[in-house]
Structure formats: structure tokens, C-alpha cells
Image (cartoon, rainbow, N blue to C red; front, side, top):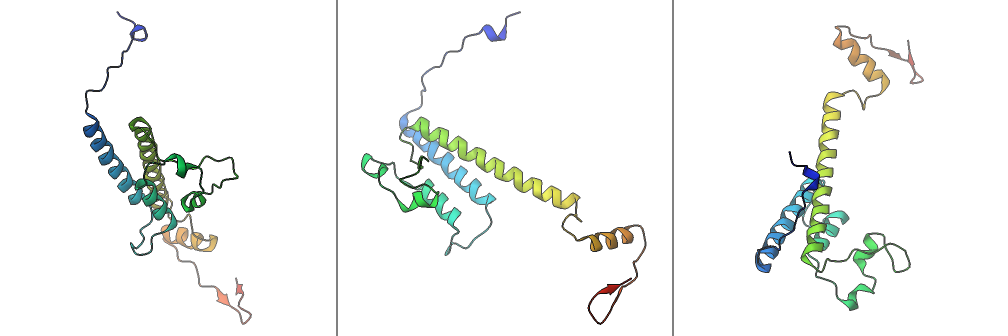
Length: 162
């Protein structure tokens, strides 16, 4: 039996034309952008939230030239980067390989956001009393076993007496 680890893999050059590859990356970027927007809270188109505006600017940005990489732009201040910080400002990928890697990262972010949304929905569904105060939780527990708690008298000072 042949050892799977002993196989050598060779990479063949891609037979895709640059136009088809660019079209595929454009479609992938559009799909990823829509997936990210689906996971964000709904906002009106007339007044987009800062994160919507940032995503829109990132997905519609032009490749940076040497003159634009050294200047501080309003979009870099949104991301929390400035010319004096050690953080690397977001730059538009120059090659198709870099673009493909960025799209994979964006897809992973969309998957993570979808998983977080699903997790919170399941948590809320299967733990309905999670956000209730102690009194309400006790009342609902009593009702679950067929009991109704008596109404507590509120005195003139607003405090409940037992």
C-alpha cells in the first residue's frame, strides 16, 4: 500500500484566462459582500451605518497607487489607523492572488458572523428565561408546574411586602 505522505504534489499553471479569473473574483467578491451585509443589522439605504459605509468603500475601492499609500485618508481614520500608529492601513490588493486571499478572509468573517447569529438565536430559543430578573423567573417556574404565585401587596412607600 502506498504511503499517502510520500506522494509529491505538483502545481500546474492555471488554464484560466485572466478575464475569466477576474470575472470569477468579481462574482465571488459580490457574493461575499452580500453575505456580510446579510449578517449586519438592517439599516436604511439613505443613512447607512459606519460599518455599512466602510464595507461599501472597501469593496468598491480602487487599487492604491504609490501616491495614495502614504497619505492619510478618511477611510483609514474610520478603521482606527493613523499615520503615526504602528497599524498597517487597509490597502487594496494588487494581484489576483492577494485579492483571492482577501476574499477568503471576508468569507470566513461572514461565516463567523452567521455562526454567531445562529448561536445567539439558539441560546435565546432554548434558554428563554436567560434575560429575566429573578422574580419573573420564579413566577414562570411556578406556572410551569401549575402554581400561581400570590400577588404581593405594595405598600404606600412603593415597597413590596410579603
